Length: 571
Image 1 (cartoon, helix red, strand yellow):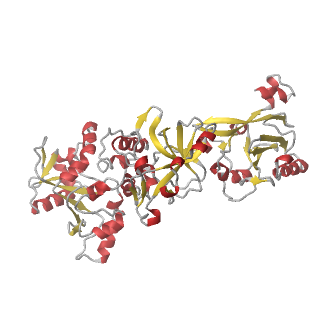
Image 2: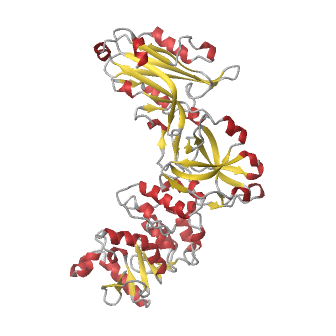
């Protein structure tokens, strides 16, 4: 460990436990900082950052500390091995320092501690940086200085202001932050920024008592890897209680959050023991199939036996709760998250939908749940980032309707790329409906006939980019029946009226008898369109998949299909 001698302002190196008492500097990096290589050169005094080092050393010397540590010049960042060691040791270096000087370069000099000065404190960028979080919490004592090295106050004297700024209630001299849940610690960093994406994770390692290899270049993968390391050493299930940012469409993901920003509203989530009968479980295990853990699944035995043949939506009860759930009625309340399980009850994903607000988490009360409604079963969760179902096939795939997707039966994954590759595109009006900018249009919501049968209809209109050619596909979905109506050309008002009539169909009995789950039609211009509907198993979920294929006139004439589109039914 290198330290700056506060008398000579030169670097000295110490090895092992032979380290003298030292003060440590916390600051926000600016342009023209003094680096390790500069400390052996006379030109160091010409750099802007030199005055900051001088001020730190003068303050430490006045307080009786013979050495100081400054990250900008006490680490040789040209050495990747030394940089990795320093990042893994940083929290310890701050916690072992006698005192930490926080230098706020953007807080102007004030003659007295006024309300205006504290307002400058609130606006300091030091509170927005990722690395300064551990620098605020780890040291035993912290003093804040303005840009003229005037004492603003200590961490204790400014406690109420600091709590308001940082949203950290456990700011004190007793390190009570260590008892905070994983979700709470992540929430403290959710709005902070770092120059490198990876540092959002690396700057939290000390707070979570984690050590791991530093791999700059991995981007957001660093946060996934960081969460995996947390799971190896902690049984704190609040790590799964993140509240997602708002999504326009239904999506599936792993249990792990793709970004620390998803913990922004988790500052009041605490760990909470479940009843004894649900506390004994096998430990987490990272496998080549993903994260394996035993879950408390809110799914009664009858439902489990009945749904073994299809993907099932259910909830996982977590051993955590919101801190403000303190009344008698909510003392037995716990956080639950939505998941979908594959037919074999082996793999699962967390479910996110547009109906879920980032400020809302599911709540279950153990007093209202019967023991046979909770199934304790191991499941595998792949540790991937969020998968938006609109991209499960191609960028040109569409998923119609957030209400359908949020229902018990996931609706179609529609692959239109083979059509768009040949110059056709979805009409703008229907794109708008597919993108759900209108919350209550005809084709969003399921309809019920007088017998209560649920069915859905969808109209897709395709128009050619460079000609007047156009056609429509009408899809119907019932509880037990899937059908595709005629592929209809829109060359006349009569046909278009016919199409709209199909869309208005309100019961299964009115669906055209020629509707099939596999249909092919030659258009007037010679192009052949084929539509097929079948079950698809994608990313451990079952969908009704719709494949629309287009064979242009030149292609099928060369292949010898002639005018018989039925030959294409076997493609």
